[in-house]
Amino acid sequence: MRRAFITGLAGQDGSYLAELLLARDYEVHGTVRPGTNPATSRIGHLLAGPTAGRVTVHGLDLNEPAGLRELLPAVQPEEFYHLAAPSHVGQSFEQPEAACAAIGLGALRVLEAVRRLPRPPRLFLASSSEIFGRPKQAPQDEETPLAPVTPYGCAMAFVTHLARAWRLVHGLFVCCGILYNHESPRRGEQFVTRKITRAAAAIKLGLQHTLELGNLDARRDWGDARDYVRAMWLMLQAPEPGDYVIASGQTHSVREVLDVAFGHLGLDWVRYVRSDPRLLRPAEPHTLVGNAARARRVLNWAPTRAFAELIREMTDADLAALRAARFVAAPA
Figure 1 (tube, rainbow, N blue to C red):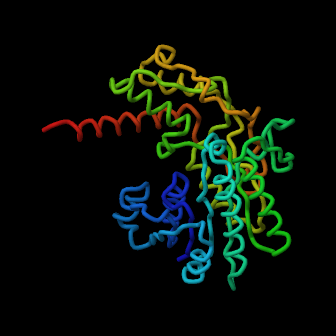
Figure 2: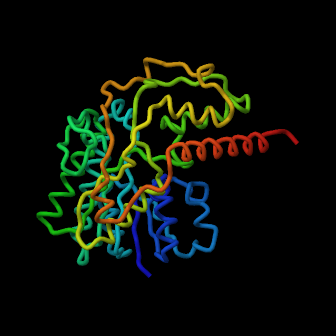
Figure 3: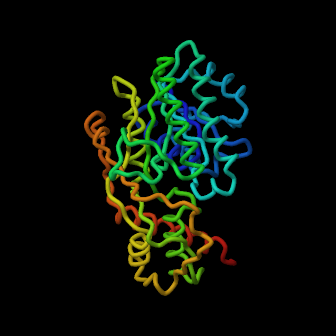
């Protein structure tokens, strides 16, 4: 039985990756923030069912390097997936120092902890399309120059360069996944896709009346998180380490998300949505769309879920959750 270690186990990507690994008969160890209750998190179902004996959760503050250095020799994983980091681009403008430290120094601490092990595991580091900023070419691939325009993107560019340097200088098997936006019913409610699908469901049920958004014309390359964690796993199964763009290769606007989510519930979003200038980003990336040809060729990876299908699934999940919550809250 192979053993894997995941930071950010209770996040969207961490929870889906844990499911994928458990389905492949791995033993999974993972970290959550101290104070997190795993039983009520996105991994609660993994701790209560038949997989419970193969999942070990470690409360760990990744800002304390000693904790990770002490834990890894005891776990001795063969694969390490570093997913724990702030993931909201807009919030990185509000707390740029904290975001850059958590993302950049967090990856550096992981690389150093792995490097010092007698048998370093294969390592995956999550990067982002935000490293390309306002690229001069579209679509982007692994050779596109890095030109970030957000604190989040700058920190992820640092992570990408670190992965390449430690691979070259120290000979680590480290892969950097340059991940474009990826969504699911487990996406945090502060992200625009989930904000929209939840609002559509709440308006349908009469629990909400309006939705405020920023730039409705902003376009993103949106994929399914479950496809993207499969790509992470495939990277660490490859004969040689490398960097890979993981993307759908198509862009859609915020308006299109609104069309699908509200239309799925028989609503006209124009009646409910307001554009708030305060929600606009200081620097909006331009034409971020990925070319995943290398992942297709080397890893035999391809996305399986279409954009509209994903948004409809997210909308249905939010509708069901809000109905269940309203039922529980109703007086006897």
